[in-house]
Length: 157
Image 1 (cartoon, rainbow, N blue to C red):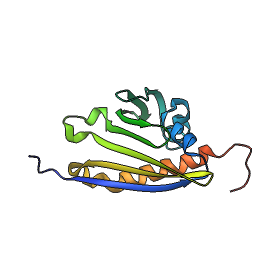
Image 2: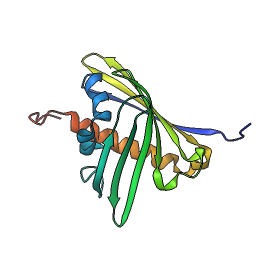
Image 3: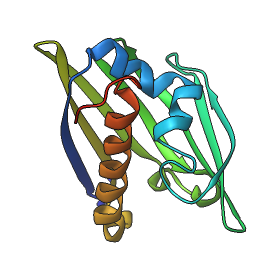
Image 4: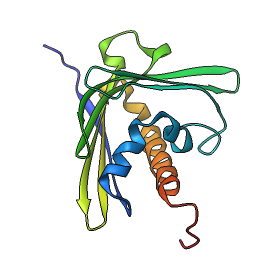
């Protein structure tokens, strides 16, 4: 029996965009490059964003930060558009054991003409010291996603 306990980071964000569109932003490689990775989010170069968004499908988001290449990898566990998306999350270079792979669940709830997204990132307590950084990283990405979803012709906000 494992004595390892997990830690959880959770963020809730409202979008003035239908759940289908917000869900699609997570599985469209081209769109991911507008808010999750790349120069609009942080100082990095996107080398590739590969997405196979089906249960058992995988993703690889390879970026270069300075001299370091970082490959964010995962496997899709649940794909229920537009309600729920669940995937594993890890840095390829860091994966030594099962504890190095965390799990991200996205739950989309329609609200009026928009939706509410609840992001839950569960990781091994081994990574506890990274919880605040993980929370801040997702918050930055969700803010970038909010901006990316606003139609370009819109000038209010």
